[in-house]
Amino acid sequence: MDRKTFLKTTLASAAALAVAPGALVSCKTKEKKTYTPLRLSFQEGLTPGETLTEKLDFMESLGVTGFEPGGKGLADRVREIREALKGRNIKVSAICAGFEGFMLAQEPEVKAQFDTSMSEIVRAAGELGSTGVIMVPVFNWQEPALPHTLETREYLCDQLHKLGEFALSCGTTVILEPLNRKEAFYLRLVADAAAICRDADSEGVKCMGDFWHMQEETSDYAAFMAAGSYLRHVHIASRGNRVMPGEDGEADNYVNGFRALKELEYPYYVSLECGCRSKDRAAAITNATQLLRSQWEKA
Ligand code: MG
Image 1: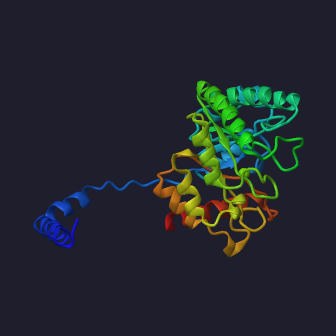
Image 2 (image 1 turned 180 degrees about the vertical axis):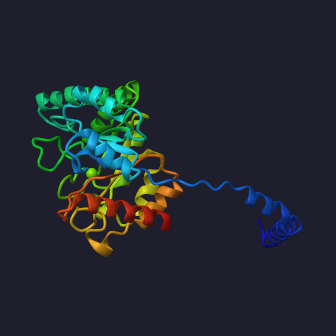
Image 3 (image 1 turned 90 degrees about the vertical axis):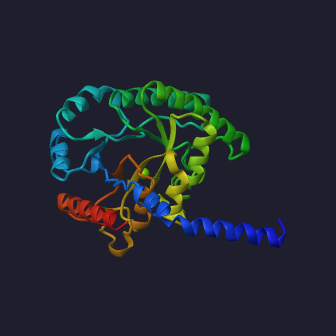
């Protein structure tokens, strides 16, 4: 396009815009504004209460709608959990790991332990209507592990594809959790986990972000946006010492990440996974809930 034609085209476009301002305004006013609520979840172990019923009563008193149990022994607890949730506005969010062995084990018997125990947890997760089972392909301390090579990544995607399809057949998913480099060098970034989900090519393979481990990220916002529809779960803790959100003061700012979750209209849970500094756990967890809700509104 020469300069003359370019100017003609530009002027024509400008004229078209000038005669139809109403059309633009009406398009804009038709934009639907949706409000994404913060769906909070508590891990079972950190919730105050002696029994499951007491824990769920406490969650209900704070308007928390997600419950995250551990995967160990889950198959034997399906009936107990179902009964306890009956008539409540609380659902099982994700299941936190609990399997034996690990996916990238070099020893066939350790890999077999993973396959058997993980399938059992995935089946139970499906029966409970869980959003998915959280897994880490390999921790730094797990040895011997397959070397960190291209071939291992291909093997990981292939194994995840099979597991993801199995999870789908059970009505749930598997959720990859990236950790900080001290715990799992293999998988540190939310975007990398999302790329593995894409390459595993199964709707049953999803990923998550954990605000504690996300010290690896340069931006909470960018990390969640990169995960997009692969994002299935979020863990949250204070950002300095992994205790209750708010117990590390000013450092506990989640607004940037929350803004991404709201823009994504993220429909799953933000689940507390943390310790507690205060001796009054119930008060600390109540404060944390209030802090997270107020930051969600600001985001
Ligand atoms: Mg976590």
